[in-house]
Length: 562
Image (cartoon, rainbow, N blue to C red; front, side, top):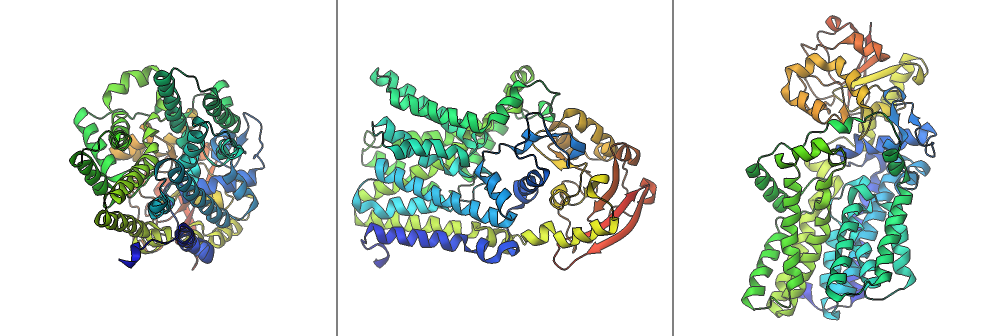
């Protein structure tokens, strides 16, 4: 088959770089007309970066707050460290430009990291170049969580450096990698769990060889220290005395054992939205096939590491599922750290484990002969094809028909609203119904509602008074707000957990029951609603005007609290 003819490694590398460029091209060509992820992206992080930039608090002191959000009750630490590269991309460039370059940087270094890791340590033979390059390319195209940056896709690059130092290669590139990676990754979104794994590897070596390997230990200490310096705001916020944050009320351990087993199998087979690996159709069958062949050809001793990764893959899914089991409830009641820090995220190691396993499996097949080489080649090409529909423009623009960046944030439409109100934006407060508060925040409005990972518990209680009757109507919304609450939204029973009512929607609200006095007590003046409120007068709300714009996804009904 010509597709699998032996060619130079340079040829495959150029081909891979071309595919990456093509994959990224819609972001750069379409700009704000591009379609990108909404969940935990447009509805939150992209607005956070802009609000932080506009606030003048990028270098804000410990204990400072963001005035634009929830009446200045939002701590500056909620927006992360100023030493994160993604913060500076958004500070220096328009949001969509920054997003495109962040995607490019992450995918480029994901490819470089996996390629170097495989070439140096796991798929080393010259004849296996298509395997290491093909798998590295597939890894680089996985639909990672955008604001996670290299928090998971940077694991192969870090592992390459650590394994080099472990093998007594002390070249400056290894040390520089460990110093620079924390500037474009997050310790809580992936690298804490990776560092635990590397520390276990060092401990394993110590027990096995009775040697301390101090340079390897020093490399772990170095990267950990850099992460702690970069994430100093997180450390300071943990040490400072402050009022309780809403996370202390998180309730996550409610599953029985059977539910946990089901969840572990689902995670093992399908994955998780924040660490999508798209491994179900192609990679998983190849892994099972390889396990069978290892035992069939009696290669267990030679392939122990692959079998270890295979078991670890499910173990990480099982740990993820068990974290939400009822057995943890007494411990979480006793120790706040088990509530406020998500230890389930050890499963964020799975992208590394799955694609490293895939590479080793394909390399094993490659060694079995010509026919099995074809199987490995077809698997790699098949995995690349499986990833194509997960390109953001295809996934969100074609399959799900979500708003483009421009349509979502609707800057021209919200500028019209601002001009209609005719007052300085910091002189009044707004909240939204049927759309995400991030839209108003992105456009400079001061909001009483928000989506943030940390904010004061007292504010959660005050805001709850506004929507108390609506929560009582809907048990799902009540549990969502009371037991999680990171979405501090004007929830409405008739809308449920839907915040994306576009201008094409014919939805209306017939029986709204807001506590408008509580809204006004918090300083609330206006409500931006994506759907008409038919009983507005009963809620002491006056419809001032509706706003529509051809470049917006929304029709906004502007209500004033009276």
